[in-house]
Image (cartoon, rainbow, N blue to C red; front, top):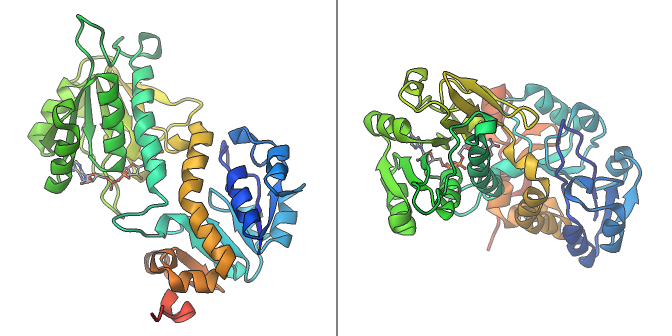
Length: 374
Ligand SMILES: NC(=O)c1ccc[n+]([C@@H]2O[C@H](COP(=O)([O-])OP(=O)(O)OC[C@H]3O[C@@H](n4cnc5c(N)ncnc54)[C@H](O)[C@@H]3O)[C@@H](O)[C@H]2O)c1
C-alpha cells in the first residue's frame, strides 16, 4: 500500500503522523511511504532522516493526497485537506466529529474511509487517547510548578521543598489517566499530594500504587472544599465521558485559597472543571482571577511535540500496519476494537454517537465489513 504523511497545518501543531521509525517499519513490510518535505521538523526529524528510513519526499500535501491509499495524520483534516480527500482513500487520524458538523459533512461528501484514533477501543479504555492524557497529566505538574514561581505570578513555592522547609501541597481532582500521571510526577518531586475521585475502585488502586506517597480522598463537596483551600497547586483532571466537565471549584472557593496559588485545568478541553476557567494557548498560558493563577491550555501535548508524537506512534503504528498489510476491510473485520474507529465510509456515518448528534443515518460497521468468523 502507498502510505503518506503530510505536514500538519493546524495552528501551532508541531506533531507529525509518522516518525522516521514508523516509516522504517512500514517500509520493511513492503509499503511505499511518502512524507511531505519538512513534515518532521517539529519533532526534530529532517527529510534526510525520513529518506534514510525508506520514505520518498513529496514537495506538497497535494501530492500526498493524490498518490496515497492511506493518509496518516495527527489532527483532524483542515478544510483545504478535506478538499483533497478522494473516494475510497483511507484517512487515519484524530477526528473528533461530534462537535464538528462542517468537517463531518466534508468527510461524508468525500466518500473517503475515515478511521478516528479517538474512538478505537481496547481493553479498558481508549488506547489511542491514553498517551495524550499521560503527557498532559505529567506536564500539568511542570506547568503548575512554573506558575508557582514568583516571577510567573505564583506564591514562590518550590513543590519539593528543601531539607528544613515543607514541600508544596498538590490536590489532584480526578484520579484517571491524567490524574494518576500528575500525582506520579508530583510525588516524584517530593510534593505533599492528595488525589480525589468519586469511584471507589479508582481510589483503591491509587491507594495500592502510591501507598504513603499520596493521600486519597473521596470526592464530595466537603472534602473538595478542604483540599482546594489547603493546596498550593490544584490539578483539574475529571472526566465524565461524553459530558461537559462538572464545575467542581466555584469562584467563591478561590477566596479560601492562599493568594498566588495555582489552578491547572487539564479538563479544559471538555469545558473545564473550575468555574473561572477559560481556554488559553501556549503563547499566553496563564491569567489571574482573584489572586489565583489559572493555566488552561487546551492542547497541552502540542508543546512537547517530540514526546507526544513518539507516544502517539507507539499506539497508532500497529493499527496502521494492520490496515496497510491487510487492507482496511480485513483489518477492521479481524479487530473489533479497530472497527470501532470507523466514523465515516463511502458517504455514510458509521459511528452511532456522531450520527445521533449530527442527525445522520447510522450505518453499523458490521454491515460494511461483516463480522469475524472464527
Ligand atoms: N488539556 C489537554 O491538553 C488535555 C490532554 C489530554 C486529556 N485532557 C482531558 O483531561 C480530562 C481527564 O482525562 P483522563 O484521560 O484522565 O480521563 P479518565 O476517564 O481516565 O479519568 C477521569 C477521572 O475523573 C473521575 N471523576 C469523574 N467525576 C469526578 C468528580 N466529581 N470528582 C472527582 N473525580 C471525578 C473519574 O472517576 C475518573 O477516574 C479529560 O477531559 C480529557 O479530555 C486534556
